[in-house]
Image (cartoon, rainbow, N blue to C red; front, side, top):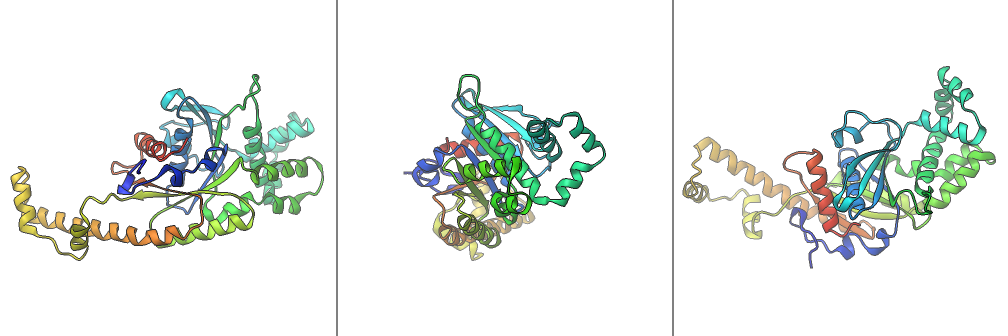
Length: 344
């Protein structure tokens, strides 16, 4: 039976978030621009942190989206605690900075501390990453690997899970195809060695890629193409997460009638008057128009679910439209919906 019902759509935890996804520790979240993937990534981090877990939320595109999502002025390019989850869990954030990551790489692998900072001061690091764009992806995925595999003094993993607000679907395959990037840059040395370790992690059961979409034709088409591309690269697709799903507030018969533009205006007026909510003729006309538009949108989403079912992914769940807008409270609301759908 239904574990959660966001948007009026029943969700069975066994299919929304199957057992195989619960065993993964590294979660990439991608999606077509405008689908709300960054908000979903933040909500996923909170959901995975529930029950006392420690989760790291990583941002790789340099847009500075984590800070405003969690109502923080700014974040340094270091791991910083930003939120508390249900059950005493914690979410830490790392806004990835390519230059800082490159400096850390040079210091760790070549002992270049002061020299690396000198290179930065003359713009050499920016030049190097521009000259070899694949180097950026290797450095970023290398840092993600280090965070994923790092262990605390007691031998346990430093983080129970890592959530990456990844590039959009149009670039996710290239971003995760470290093998290609490695061939373009180096076949030996520390960079190649790091890339080999990253490849093993990305293609392991520890890693999964979730795709955020909307119940609209273009986002669903791009999601289907991304899923196909990821499978061709032997990367594991996790859940297709539908964002902004609308609730069905009317019966099927009422919805069909409203979508066809057939609404009993006098009956609606009588019901509102009886509830002590009288409306002017103009306001009533506006309400009826909005009802028709809502019904048509819900019906459009219902039809789009046929395309959703055609996308090959082990998990599939829907998140409700946040009627109050996207703020920190809304992110927690979405995390609650994810938890109810079986995310943990």
